[in-house]
Image (cartoon, rainbow, N blue to C red):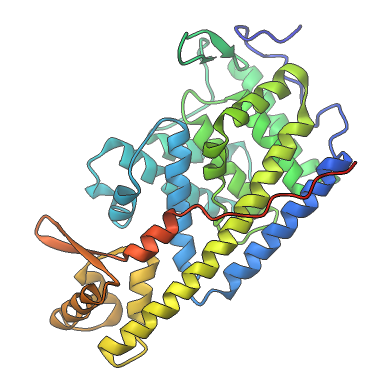
Length: 370
């Protein structure tokens, strides 16, 4: 049966696709993307304190991935409440922080068992904050936001959906002849096309992308901020997903994903370099105000861009007056900005915060000649 936007796509073809996947263009792009990922992995390993990146990138990824689903919060809020999710009052902030929690829960799962549809259910449950299972009721479709007309209707029926997920899972583990990045691109399309849950499919699918890269050993930590690339190319992202469904245009979709990985990896390398320069400058200032190379104080200021006096007291094992004096001195030196939050003060590493927000540029691919 020919695909129709308003008809459940129970005929969604199984994986692997029945077309040539690793074309010359795809293979070239895969090599470039893998090289960029290796460069990122090496840059992260060189960091004195990789926690700086591990804490920050998943939060930015959470914010961007949630924004794709029109769950919009401020970066200020997600970092302010990163250490105490229960204190967040904005529903969008709470939703975004749940994404971060789901990501790390997924990482813990794949450390002990292969990535599977069970992983997806667990991740989606945390993303939604309630027990999730495969869709059982008909009526789910993706519509035009302006007219409400169906753009795509995913497979319907619990048995059909479970069969599709079983095939998706088998493909993840039995496609040894394909590059893992190509597998990830194909698997991401298929998961979104199956649309197995009532809610949270997009966010769950983007978490699974990170888990696939980690399972393949291509990155050690969740430091690839791919959702920003999707936001910047949102129309193209959805157009190419639809072209796979309608026309079987796998090549352009895979090239889009590979280019996103390459650009994101290289921009993160640039961000790491800038962070290291800023850390060196900050450490010099810390030496001036504490008469010591206080690595613990530096860690407090960079592991989260927001800190409180109590964080310094605990991490640096100093009295509250000493911690207050240090932070006040850093405010005077322009390293920190302090703001009132109820009865306490929050100290913001503003330069680091701005650096995290900055979209780093990465070189474009060379033209493909074949």
